[in-house]
Image (cartoon, rainbow, N blue to C red):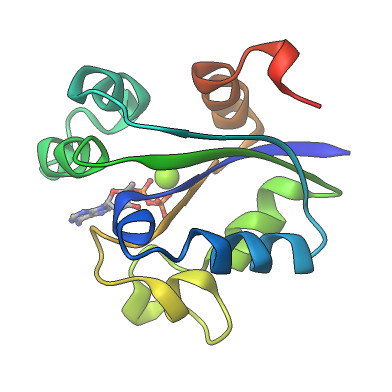
Length: 137
Ligand code: DAT
Ligand code: MG
């Protein structure tokens, strides 16, 4: 069983659609092994997205992620990393396939409702960024 890291981002939590996204996660066969609601600081967002530090959208992205609470998750499934990326859909909701979360709920390229690890290496960085081992069940 593989694990991946997911976030329900500020735009979605603000619109009270956390439950709708959790429903999609569970009905697509993911097991939630960690879940909590947090409001991260700008510094914590910058650390999380350090891989994007040289991108022009880095400041905008980090400011957005720190503007209001998020729900952080660890999801378990066979092939969880690729499977969760598939269920999320393309980064830009306008390009996302029908049935994906970003297509259904995303507002824009920047405010695209969900995050997911893109590789085993990023999952190995992102999961312990937010969760202690004893919080994963
Ligand atoms: P993904 O979240 O699909 O892994 P990414 O890692 O390339 O995409 O970028 C991280 C987030 O940054 C993405 O979810 C939305 C935002 N973003 C990406 N490209 C952007 C751009 N050109 N302008 C503004 N925000 C962008
Ligand atoms: Mg990414």
